[in-house]
Structures are given as C-alpha cells and as structure tokens.
View 1 (cartoon, rainbow, N blue to C red):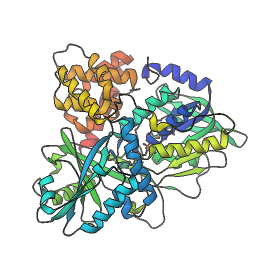
View 2 (tube, protein in one colour; view 1 turned 45 degrees about the horizontal axis):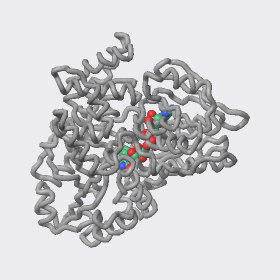
View 3 (cartoon, rainbow, N blue to C red; view 1 turned 180 degrees about the vertical axis):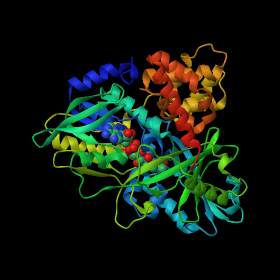
View 4 (cartoon, helix red, strand yellow; view 1 turned 90 degrees about the vertical axis):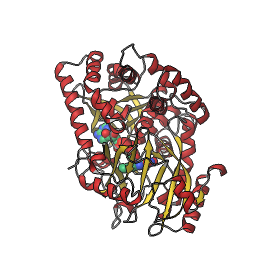
Length: 539
Ligand code: FAD
C-alpha cells in the first residue's frame, strides 16, 4: 500500500504523534510540496501538514503555465525572469507528460501594447535570459502570418505577432506528484490536518499543535525547524507566532473562466492585450478553452474565493474585443476558478505592479516563512529554504546536496516523443483521443494502473472514471469527493457536465471503500453540488 493513501491515514497520524522530525512544513501547496521533497531527498526527517486538501489554495487556481512571465520583463524583473525562465526546461524534464511545451501566440495590436520592435527585442531577451534552445526561440510574424495562426483575431487591429515557447501544466497534479515523490523519500505527508499553535522550548519553536479535521481532535508534532509555506495564509501563522512585523502580504485575486472549445476554438494559446494595459490568456485544453486572468485587490475569506459577475464581465469584454466573431455570452461560461496571489505589499503600487518575487522571513523564535513566488519557481524556492534550514540547524550532519532537478515524478517518461508513443499505445484500449489525453497528461504511465482497475460495466466512461477514483483513493490521498473532482482530475473545471452526471455513483463508491455513514455521504454530495453552483453561477 502506498504511503500516500487515505487508507494509510491512521499509520501516518501515529508517526506524526510519536516521532520527532528535523523539519515540519506547514502548507501543502506547490511551495510546501517543493520544500518537503527537497528536504526529504537530502536526508532530513520531514513531515508536512495541509489544513485542507493538497493544492487547495492558489496551487490549484493558477493559469496552469510553467512560464517565464513575459510581463515581468516589462517590470524589469530580470532576475525573476531568468530564474523561472530557466526552470521551465528543468521541470519539463522531470515530468514531460505533465509539463508540456506549448507555443504561445502574441498578436501585436495597432492601438495597444508594445510595438513590433520592442516586442521583438523583449522576446529575444526573454529567450536569452532563460537559455531557450535556438529551435524554440521566438519568431516574429507578419500580419498575414499572425492571422493565419489565429484567424479569429480582430483583422482590423492586428499588425503582426510573435510565436514563443512556454509550457502548460496542471498545477494541482504537479503539486500532488511532488508530494508523492517526497513520500518516496520517507516524508510523512498528510492532508486535513491544520497547524493551530506553536509549541516552544524556552523561546524557540519546537513543534506545533495540529488539529485532525477528519478525526476531530488535537495533537502535537515535534520538530527542530518549522517552515510556514501557507501561501495566502502566511501572515495568519506569523500572527500566531507573534512575529508579524515589517513586510506583509498583499493578496490579489485572479479569475479564469472556462467555455467549450467550440465557443472559442483558438488554434493555440494566445496572450493578448486588453484596453486597460493588462494582458490575458486564452488557452485551449481538451474539450474546453479557458480565459484569464483578472488582477484585483482582495480582502475577505481566503478559503472561499469565487468568480463574481464583475470578473466575468471584464474577461468577456476583453475576449470579445480581441476575437470579434466569437461573441461570448455569460451563458457560455461552463465553469471558473478564482485564486489569490500571495504577494509582498509595496506601498503605493497597484495589484498588477507588485513584484512576483519570493521572500523568506525568519522570526526570533525560529519560524521560517516563505511567501510570494511562482508555481514555476517552486524548486529554486525550496532549495533556498532548505539551504537556510541546513546552514542554521544541521550544518554538523552530512546531508546530500539539492538534487531535485533529477528526481523524476511518478508516471514520467523521458521525452515528449516517448509520451506521444505511450499515448498511441493507450488507444489500443478503445479509448477516444480526449480520454487518452486526459489520462496521459494527468497521470503519465500511471494510466496503465487506472486502466487495469476498470471493471466490465457497460457504461465504459463510468468504468474508467470509477477506476480513476479507486486509483486516487489508493495512491493519491483522496479524502473527500471534492478532492477527486477538483484537484486530482480537474473535472469540475474542464468537464463539469460529466462531474454533475456522476456525483451520486462516485459518492456511493467512496461510501463503500471508505466506510462512510449516511450522514457523511449526504454531506459530500451536497458539498459538491454547492461547489459546482459556486463555480458556474456569478453574483
Ligand atoms: P498555496 O497553494 O495557497 O498553498 C498554501 C496551503 O497552505 C493551502 O493549501 C492552505 O490550505 C494551507 N494552509 C493554510 N493554513 C494552514 C494551516 N494553518 N495548517 C496547514 N495548512 C495550512 N505561477 C506560475 O508559475 N504560473 C502560472 O500560470 C501562474 N498563474 C497564476 C494565476 C493566478 C490567478 C494566481 C493567483 C497565481 C498564479 N501563479 C502562477 C502563482 C502561483 O500559482 C502561486 O505562486 C503558487 O501556487 C503559490 O503556492 P503556495 O504553495 O505558496 O500557496
């Protein structure tokens, strides 16, 4: 049985209560996951607790790109662009099925954005900073070439364009796979355990009190060092530690909406200018296209962030202005997600002008907090944190150097060619193209394990979905039905009709396998229905 399974929860809890750890990470988003993997793979005894599901916060609500952040070049953040730009190829190598090369089209407008030459030089610098291979470097396009790439663009406004290289991913799945790898290096990793209070020995932190949200009780975890990687919640734990001084977080909300691919059939991802000087993406994904993002200041409940009618109006206006033939309406939006950027506050700067750089804060009692940063830069952020932890607390013991650039994630093959070949072999199982893509891009070669779990149900779509659920219960710590539908499969975003259709049968399987009583079963069904309403209706 996998050590990353809800079925192993009692054993993981028992170890958390009885063992003493070198490092306890709080927060199971990409930042915490990266730190847990880096620390465990160097030889530190590592634990990680996540209050909700893994990737519950921003790490399931991003634009889902492993990208250099072209717009940070405009803000002259050369260091950030160089680091995250170079990381793209590294993260791709770790999981070529999950971090997939994607060419971006950047149309140039008559009235908005940078001109042809500035864009040409900017993209050249972007490629150079990130060390992009010559064959993948940017190509400038004429007006007619741009319109050939994307005939839906506004013809009277396009004056040229550029094609450049980025990568797309699934943020939540990337987080889950990194955590699985940490568990392979003997980290104890658990979701639905909330860190509530620090435990001190003298004036130094020596562990945490934690609350098991499933069992409903509190227990203690002992650790030499505690790292606060709670993204938008970082300041809450700094407050608990009475160390919230100096720099603070500034939360901004970013929204994405999803329409069916037929409604916005872009031929590739497009990154286009908006009237207000911002830029947004339209990204095709399977049977859908998603559009985002907004960037507005946010104050409110960090655990309950949803898309408003105002957000939707902004994105619809932007997309209809850039692609006049599509004329998207509110009723075309199938689903949406909204996330919070945990940025560092800078006096007088607007939401979109704030830096995306990460920062580490250390309190006098030893709490290490990390905030800011990007999904793309998770590995380097983790390396910096673990270097600091080792330098300060474990310099006298022999540990391995950081080698997360060579730890392949589960299901990974060696190249895009191998992934394509593997996808072709899956078609022999009688699966259609979109299903193969869903399986391969989310699970890599673990798709074989899922296919082997299928039964002979005449509803073959159901047989496969049920097999996915069983796989995720056994090997991916699914505790609630939402974990499966949101963060293991993305179904509520990218195939909401299918998610709705199978709520009841999925809940029934979970009831049987996890021994839920009727009350829990009813609660799970109601919670998913409520979530789907929140994702697809806009107030
Ligand atoms: P989170 O993912 O929020 O994780 C923090 C976790 O801590 C949460 O799961 C939370 O439940 C948990 N937690 C909180 N309190 C406690 C507690 N007391 N005990 C235990 N656990 C706790 N970056 C890119 O590289 N590419 C992109 O395309 C991109 N697009 C973005 C688009 C948007 C709209 C936004 C908002 C961000 C985007 N980013 C992107 C940035 C990136 O998504 C974030 O930097 C990253 O996901 C932050 O991860 P995190 O782990 O720090 O925070």
